[in-house]
Length: 109
View 1: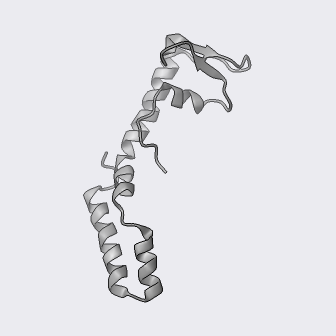
View 2: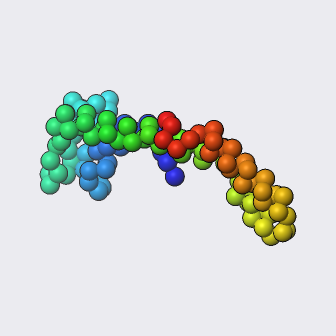
């Protein structure tokens, strides 16, 4: 599944190391970043800016996928049609999926 909200600084930091290696003393901004695990090096502010921007750009690029996932018909509609041998129901499910894909083309944010 795709994250619903745009990534923030703490999301990028979590991608660097396992476990609770960092925290914040107040607002979640770089100047308040505290490193709890001495084996982890504090990233520079520029590394945080660049890493977060890359993560946010990747998230934005997958906007079409989040939109599609929210609008696709339930898979149970397809399965029900298969179980009942109802080709019209199966065709409707496929057409509904294709309409969603056309509404949110791959690569569109």
